[in-house]
Image 1 (spheres, rainbow, N blue to C red):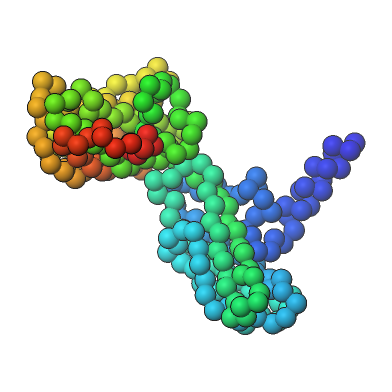
Image 2: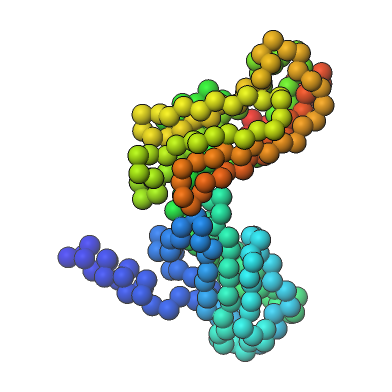
Length: 258
């Protein structure tokens, strides 16, 4: 009985009007498909004991829409905040904080939170060095990676290596499974190969095209296009930024730098 009452209280709380957030907590956040923008109209309440004028909005995302219904609020008064944010190249839980700065310097900004989940069409992950590609990386820093950075010596072509993992959730898997139809790469530095794992995920391995070396020195900024059979995401563009010079390895390297 106590557990049932707790569940009923949570349900009532979730159904009640939420202020200064789009959901009562991240657990109740809505889900959108990767191709769909996240949209929310949030009720914003002036939590201060005096009237305020909103002078500036600051946010943690590049929102395509951030529109406040009213910038002058008396104590306890509410207005609306419309938020639209892209969900492309994302997956899983997302959050945005919007700070409403007021003209009175003695008052703290009003904080507004938006939470949502993105159901990816095709997840694009980097595989950490030495890790197995069977599952998506547990560390979210390696998830949803579309930019790969490499800095190697010209006489060590065997060290030029990146691995990319493609996968679909069950709701997005094309009939017959996800496939790579082709890889378009206009350059000559890298070579690409793909293989399908037993669980349907695909691993794309990028290595130096000339394994004997030496590699050409210089900086290379190149776009690689992965063509898939997914109707909603038939083209996946990856950015490879490669620097080849004799200074590689002399400075500490960020292992998370993709």
